[in-house]
Length: 484
Ligand SMILES: [Ca+2]
Ligand SMILES: [Ca+2]
Ligand SMILES: [Ca+2]
Image (tube, rainbow, N blue to C red; front, side, top):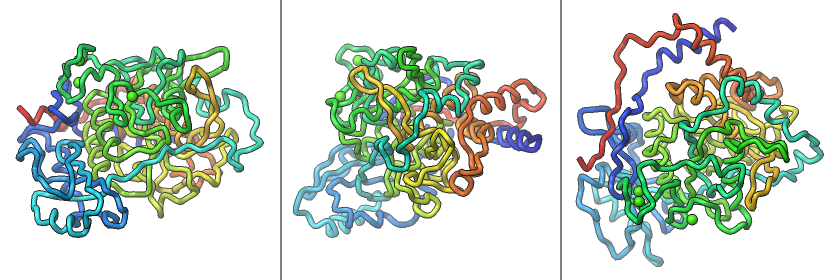
C-alpha cells in the first residue's frame, strides 16, 4: 500500500503537461477551436499530425459508401484561401475545426476518381468518411441482467458516494460537458444544473464570436440551434438526460434518486439524434466547443468501431489542455484489447474507458471488456436516473457507467481545482476496489470507489512534504486566436 501511494505521488509530481491558460480564450470566427500562437506552446494540431501515419486516407474511405467526407489540411484554414477549392463533384458543408473540412459528395460521382483528384492537392493531409457514432446503452431487460432485485441506492453504496460527500458534493465552477442526445433541463432534478455561457447574451448577436448566435447554454449540432434539449420524446431522445442525471441530478427524496456530484454544472451539447446516432463531424464540433468553453470533464457515452482521425485530433487537444475524457467502452461483449472501440480505446492518458458491473460486482457478457484497454468498471445495471417529461427510469450499459466516473471525477476536481486530467485518472484508478471477478476483464480488476479516491487525494494534500511543486519549469500553453 505504501508503495502504491509513493507511486501515485511520483506520477503526479512527474506529470508534464501544458497548463490551462488563466485568461479567457479568444474564440475563432466560425469555429470554436483556439490554437496557439507561433513560438508559444506547440499547436495541438501540428503535434497531432506528427503522430499520424504516412497514409493520406482511411482504409474504409471508399468501402464505407459515405457521401460525407472529412478532409484534414496540413494548414489551418485561416492561413489559406477560403473556400480552399471548388468542384462540381461535391459541395462544401462546413469547417468542423480549424483544419478539417466537411464535404458532401453529389450522388453519382465516382468516388475513386474524386479521391485521386483530391490527393493531387498536397495541402490535403488526410481524408476519411464522416463516421456514424452510436449511444452505448441497452435495454434493462437484457437477459444477462434479468431477475436482479436491487434497491434504488445500490450503485452509490458500491462506489461509496455518500462517504465522498463528507469532502464535497461538488461546486458549480466545475463543468461536465455531456456530449449526447441533449439534456432535458425542464426536469426539476436537472433545472439548477444547467451551464451558462458567461460570454454570450440572448440578443440575436454572436457576442463571443464563436460562430454561434446566442449559445447561452451550449449548442445543438443536430438541429443547428441554441437549444441542446432532446428532440420529441421518442425512441432514443432520453439518452443524454439519463446520463446528465447520473452525473449531477439533485437529490429527490420521493424516489431516492441522486447524481454523484449534485452541485456541479452540466454543459449540454447535442450531436446524437433521436435514434441515438450522430456523425463524427458534429461530435468533433461539440468536443471543440467543450474545450473552448471551459469544461474540465467531458462525458462520451457513445462510440463506434471506426477509427477516426478528426475525433482523435480533438481528443488530443483535450489532453494538451488537461481535460479529462470519460468514455463508454461499448456493449457488444467484445474484447477491446483486440477489437478497439472508439473513442474509449484511443490511447491518450486523459481518457478513461469505462465498462459496467452489476450490484454484485459481476461483469456481464454483453459488456465490452479489456484487461489492458478498459480502465475502470462502474455500476451500469438498472440504474435509476432522470428521464424526459419529469420522469425517472432505469437504464443499463456502459453509457450509464461512464457518467458515474464523470461524476466522481467532478467531485475530485471540485475538492481540488488544480487537479489535471491525468491526476484525476490516477486517483480514480488507485482509489478503486479490486474485484477478483473483474480480473482479465478490466485493468487490474478495478471498480470505481469515489470515497477511496477522495481519501487518496486528501492524504496527498495533508502531506505537503510530498506535495511540493516540481522545481523544473513547466511549459505553459498560452492559447490565443489564430486570427490575431
Ligand atoms: Ca456565440
Ligand atoms: Ca448573443
Ligand atoms: Ca434543438
